Image 1 (cartoon, rainbow, N blue to C red):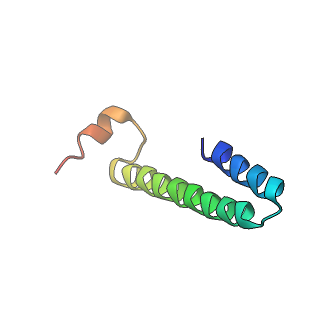
Image 2: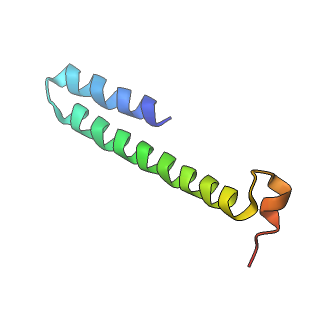
Length: 63
């Protein structure tokens, strides 16, 4: 969904001859990369605490 929005910004910027669409696309890529980094950090924390990626074991990590 983020890539589609970025593509729309780039296409609109190309249509009107403005570099604004490319700048917005860079911001969108940065936001997507930070979202992936947070998700990876969560997965790594679950793995470190439970020594596995079992969803049932992860539910026991409350508190």
